[in-house]
Amino acid sequence: MTAEEIQAEWSRQFEAVRARALAGGGQPGVATPAQLAGKTGLQVLQAMLAGELPFSQIGQTMDFALVEVSEGRAVFQGTPQVKHSNPMGGVHGGWYATLLDSALGCAIHTLMPAGRGYTTAELSVNIVRAASAKTGPLRAIGTVVHCGRQLATAEARIVGPDGKLYAHGTTTCLVFEMPAR
Image (cartoon, rainbow, N blue to C red; front, top):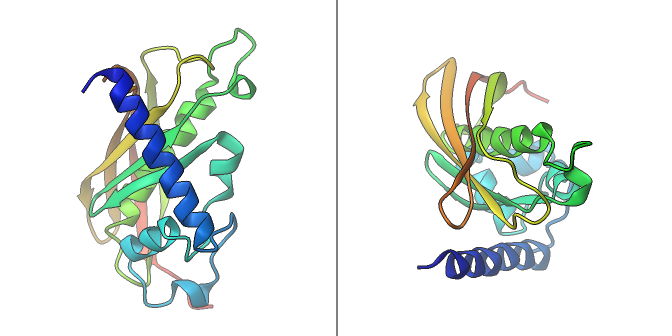
């Protein structure tokens, strides 16, 4: 496929995910403990994609969303906007970092059994190509490297439809039992 065909496919998938989530009643917010009870991390993320659970508000703020999820893998798609620019007109490093952190953390989330959670302990971001509001959609593809009882690591890349690398990053997350509420 050409970069234009890939970009068109990405746009179709992004809009389909958004429509499905909203049709299922999905709204930005935070799921209640009762909504999460008994669900694995993968089941939680699948329910968000289906609109059965609230999705993260940061996605609306930063113009990105979860578009694919499977065991050990999470894909987010975002389109940089002028509002994400630094004073020089390039995309602010925080946009890249937030997109990467979402893909990295959700990749780890897919491997959490019911009742287990995680939090980012370390995040490393390397920006290798400037993006702007003219760049179009980008995808952060996160994959788990290791998931243990106490620590998990993952890596992610932000790429364009032409395969060009814009940024890459890694994370180390602490894994723990979720407190009873």
